[in-house]
Each structure stands twice: as C-alpha cells, then as structure tokens.
Image (cartoon, helix red, strand yellow):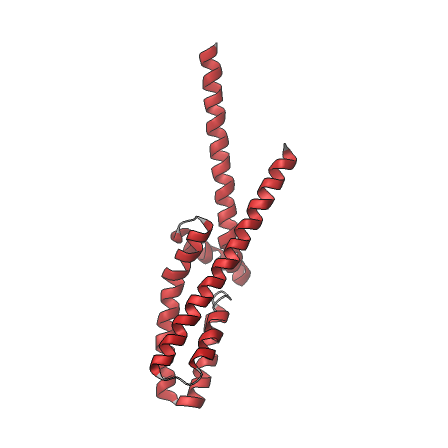
Length: 170
C-alpha cells in the first residue's frame, strides 16, 4: 500500500509540474503576442522579435520581465528614439502588470486547479523566503500541498464514516 501511495503522489506531482510548465509557456506566448501587437501598433522597429523576447523572458520570475524591458527599451532607443522607447516601456510595463496580476494567475490557476489568489500568494511568499527559485517553485508546491491536504481530509472523512457504520452495526 505504501508503494502505491508513493507511486500515486509521484505521478500526480509530475503531472502538476508538467502542467505548471505548460501554463507558464502558454502565458509567455500570450504576453509575447500582446507585446508584439502593442509595439507593432506603436510602430516600434523589430516589434515581433522584441515581443517574442519579452514573452520568453517573462517565464523568469520577476527579473525576467525587468531584463526584457530594459533590453527592449535600449533597442528601441537605438532604432526609434527616446520618445518611442519611453512610450513602449510604459505600454509594456502596463501589459506586464496585467499579465502578472490577472492573466498568469488565471492561466496557472486553471491549469493546476487552484485559485488565482493562491497563485499570487504562493509567488509572493515563495519569493520572500526563497528568492527567485521560491517564486518559480512556490505555485506547483502549493498545488501538491493542496492535493495532499485534500487527500488527508478525504481519508479522515472516510474513516469517520466507516467508524459510524461500525457503531451502527453494534
């Protein structure tokens, strides 16, 4: 029975981490697409390339988004001037805030079957205590803890129900 429990939780943990990575990739695609569209509308040179770059770096918690914006602003200064770079930076930062606070928690939460609020809290707490790795791993770890907690609650409920049946039969 112990072997089956370990195998079950290993499978489910693997599934959670794979779903998390897939949802992060989907979010990167969404962010890259939105950034590409916004920069194309603004007439930023290399908008699609910069959008893809921003989307990919968006997968790196916290610092990835900052690094992507800084490099994109630098490239935009060289190709379109300071006013266009400032405008682009403002738009992309707004998009990143919308992504970080609404889009990403929704995508990841639905993928892992946890509340978007838990996603935000997990990233915040994970980052506060364990830095970048904590930010990245906190959400799937929270999903695994939720799975374990639900199973413990279900086990205790089933045990109480079984005890009630035994008491009734006596």
